[in-house]
Image (cartoon, rainbow, N blue to C red; front, side):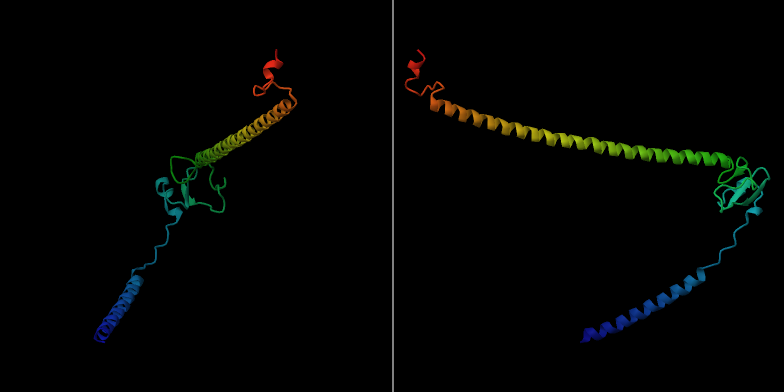
Length: 181
């Protein structure tokens, strides 16, 4: 009984301490949250090096301005900026070269995946005939063995019939010595 009453205050103290800790963590969590500052508009950037690191911005060398990348189109329209003059991601590569590079890389990856799949399929197909050939070879061997057994049985029956009617020389037969002379 004594142990039960001494544990009860310890449990209630522990529960109250956990409750206070939980409240403090929620209050401190609420105080730490700050509202993010509004994003800088693309038009505020005045050179290519400051503009292109932002994924939402596009630099145009034809007009020397930074504009919002038109997310409704995959490629920016020519009215906004010609592809050879547009820069996105890096200043040293125009949008046209970037598209060609990405297309070549994508095509290379797709081609390599296709070649790998074809190689795997051909390898698995070439292993299957080996298994089939082994199975057919075993069946052929079994058929040969059965045919050989039938041939031996047939020869034994024919020899027995020949012996029965005296058509075969039998060394066990007592008159076989005289028949051949």
